[in-house]
Amino acid sequence: MMYLKKPLWSQGKPEPDAKTTTTTTTAAADCGDAVEELVDSLQQQRVYREVTLALRTGLRDARAEFSFLRVRGLRNILKFLRSVAESDSTIDLFNRTQSIPQLQVVPVLFEHCLRETGDYENENRVRDLNHIFGVEPLKLTSPATDAEVALALRVLEGCCLLHPQSTGLAHQHNAIPVLMNILSTRGVLEQGACLDALISLMVDSSSNQMDFETCNGIMEVADLIRDKQVDENLRLKCGEFLLLLIGHVNGRDAAPLATIHEDTRRLLGEKSASLIWAASQFGSTLDPEQRLTALQIQARRVLESLDLY
Image 1 (cartoon, rainbow, N blue to C red):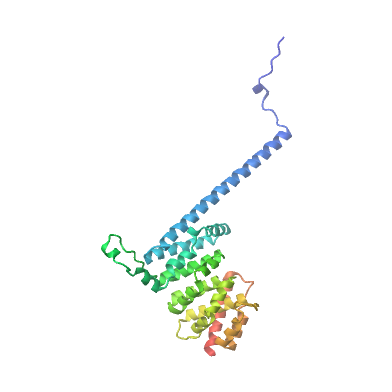
Image 2 (image 1 turned 135 degrees about the vertical axis):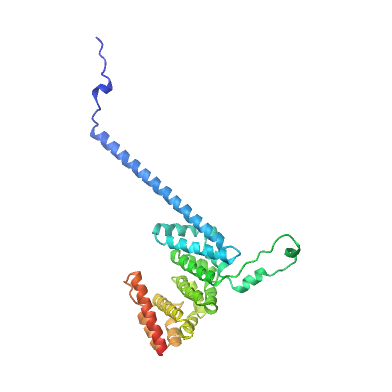
């Protein structure tokens, strides 16, 4: 007599044992983790491509011969930096791009947007007759406008705050002397942006602080804040600058800026210097908005003390 096994479908679905269930669950979890890691990796690669594309597009315009194109590029870069600052992950991606020479922002600013007017004139001067009698056109570079310089300074400030190593790149391009020249020769729009950029350049950068001291930077700022003919908003900005700078170097006895308190006392008087010294330690526990309000109030008090002095 022959016995045949029952077909599998006639026995119903077999009940899985505990070992099989555990193995299946673990495999599913591992698979889910792998898929999640893959999705995260693809997302990060996509964001990185968007970051590099935005930088390449902005830098291409910032290198242009015409100022209106450079302004467009600077506006796009500034908008890009503001969006980058919203997330630690995008800040990290931006910092990674700044290790690539073709994507570095600071060199482009100093080579194309923050040049002195004389540099443009020398570049545009016809040195031979080949461009006149030949077919190759002469490339002319338009000088930077006030708006372009102000935008470039804002971009420089953002780069230094998001990517601290940018302060070293700026030092290689003589950033402090360039900015001190802007502070003493340009208009109110550029001067205000220049003071903000100077602070970002000197935070934790001893080389830039030494350059500022060499350029007699405190004297230049003191001359502006004491001059009652200067725009009041710019004088207030100078007060904020002194409060931030002295608050940052407070307690340091070593160079650079070791004599900043003595210099402030000599240039602004004992009363104003003492007020700046005391007020520079305002609200370290306050949130950013409250600290900004406190900074503006203290700067107003410094200005009032100077006007009474």
